[in-house]
Image (cartoon, rainbow, N blue to C red; front, side, top):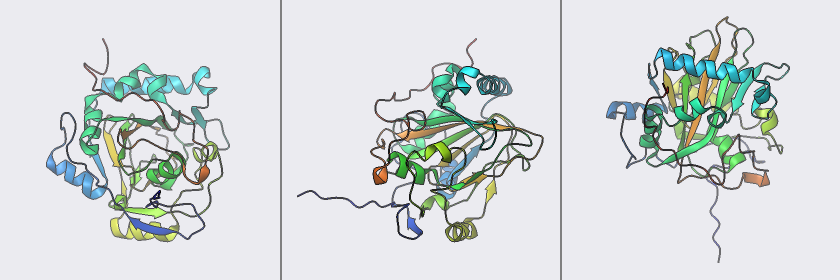
Length: 307
């Protein structure tokens, strides 16, 4: 007799919106490798669902990374690929995916112990890159990213089974209150919002520019914001934000003159590999969601910038 386990995090079905309590730990026991975070930092991450580490990378490293991203954003060979996503209604580059495979420098960045060891410590296992991208918000024209939980999308569209992944955003420009900084809802990672609306196939082609499915309903969002508030992360270039895969987040458009850019890496536990997408959806392409064979990340031996 075959026993079918029910999905704890059902979403985008005919049922109405719902809020479901998280079942997994936030910080996992038995961290792998070195442990860069102290108890206070781990507690902050566990309580809020995110952690800011200021000035993790120096000015020279930031300049090299930013120059690398800017070069990719104007490279015709990259812009002609599906990895390059432009804003809806314009040709302005919004995101470039799979940057850790398109750039040797970013391939080194995702293995830098300053970020990799934090991911391994929090997730309590070896990790791999589920997704990487450079996010760009040029001055005056950068568009918003609406409120969402990444896990909701990765669970439904990629088949990620559990909340055992995190995002790492390396700031390549100063993030201030005016240029569309990342906003997070503290404590929201402990609740899963089951969203309404059935997902169109190949939804990623539109959602990477503007997400319309898998977004929280206003009532659920208001409840979680009333409980935890909203925190806009303002920090200098070189700072790094780590946030749990289920933390609600978004960012406003950038109508300031100051651009905003970051390199965004999703570290997933090797014990949490993706399966089949839900609802019979076609798997998203490899540049959006790693599946099948993948390299387990090992810490970089040496400086980020090669002499």
